[in-house]
Length: 414
Picture 1 (cartoon, rainbow, N blue to C red):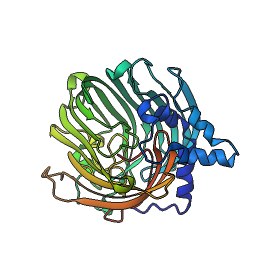
Picture 2 (tube, rainbow, N blue to C red; picture 1 turned 45 degrees about the horizontal axis):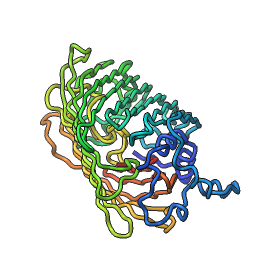
Picture 3 (cartoon, one colour; picture 1 turned 90 degrees about the horizontal axis):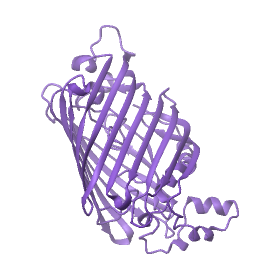
Picture 4 (cartoon, rainbow, N blue to C red; picture 1 turned 60 degrees about the vertical axis):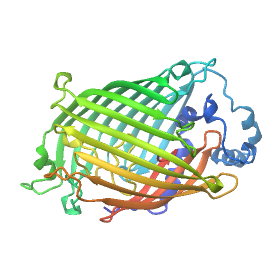
């Protein structure tokens, strides 16, 4: 896999995040934990991309300090064009719209938000994601939605960690995702709940391989459609004050049990456990050492091929930087990542990271872990909004078997 796009990548990533105002609105409005900085440098001395833009336009940036407390429950809407880049999509163009609001001013309540986007990629993929997070007063309940429609040509290499570039072939499909989850707070930082998940793939076809060749998809059991439909039980602990850019000393832990059921329309009955654990340690000079453990373990049954976990298949496609989405897949997936985050400039505008990861997937025949695929890299952080501590993240990851490339995010990878 060689995906190099020269010097255009930096400009494209920056343009995307600078224009993507709906996510900014969702992350900065009306929430005390997102409008106070924990940095020792006063906000008046810090600089972000919005400050730079205002200075270029000869605007008074001091006025921003007078408007950071928000103004209540009113719905804030915004829309913008977007341009972005990932290893799995190449360059992407589209438009996005979103909004943010709080449901109570009398009780401390997290910001509710929603985001919808329409995207078309360099690899002729069409994406329509709709994501939402609704908090009731006092954070008693959190209702989370993740709906997506994709028309998505995607490379695949088969199952296991020993696949090579010679195993690569393209699969094209249409995909509908409907995830809804409701969590209830039962103690400080502790939530439990449940929900429903639907993964529906249809019009599946394999492209670009010689007639008669047996692919990894064929060996697993090729079908031109698949349905996974089931219930989810969820337990979560979250002490992060700011999930966009967590401070040292905080922690996030989530455990999900997913049971797909034929009575709900699933092709087969299968279940899995998903673990997502993140820990952050404060270091001198305002640096943070972060660790991330992510794993999906199929307990029984056989998930459809396109529902198998692997590199970049987490909710926001962030695991295993340096590898394309789905480069390694299996019935079991485990990934451990670490990252050192440090400031570069005193005014907070620039920061940097170095990171490393090690992952593994189960093999097709033995269903055991036999290989490890590591990656490492470095990245630049540009402060997009100093009140929410939101960074534009541009990382370059390097893996094995000639896997490498840029990844972009708004907010930290984990």
